[in-house]
Image 1 (tube, rainbow, N blue to C red):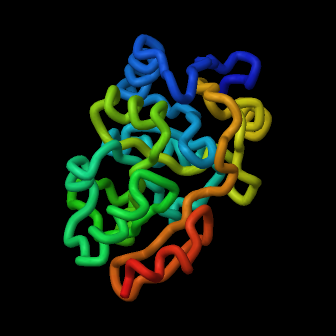
Image 2: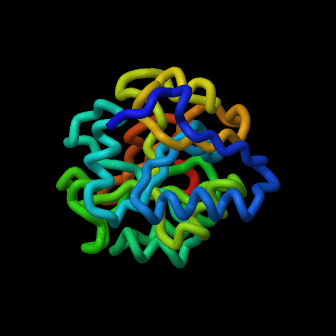
Length: 215
């Protein structure tokens, strides 16, 4: 059952000094299987527990997105990477040291633990270690990596504020974290490292910046 945008629960949380009580309240919703619109270090995203049954399908329904599109995941540490990815190439360490935490998403072979619905059956997973304190603390409080696909209808512009989320996903999300306007209005760059490195999506990090670490 959908909720109207007026009835959506909004949590106003400072992006740099997030309140732990509020973070824990939002994390509890995520652990219960809810999808929550949250600010990241780029645009607003849809945060949920990727290992919970039915979560991917809920996100596809919210976004009206084809199930053939994989869902990006967010982690809060390199240690957590092993929960979602495996067989990382040597270039990964150079790239991670230079650009993580930050607006760069890496595509790597998926851990067997990642549901096929998250990877869209590709066997690969897109992962990012964000820099923003709010989303990092929410990941930690939730106790698992979080989904991070953009909080907008598929094909629509990415949302850079909670108000844009409410307008764009009216009646589709129950919970929204308002952390102010995005400081980096571009989405993350997506770099595929599963074979020859290639940019899947150009975003906040350019190929010129990446190339020096890929030689």
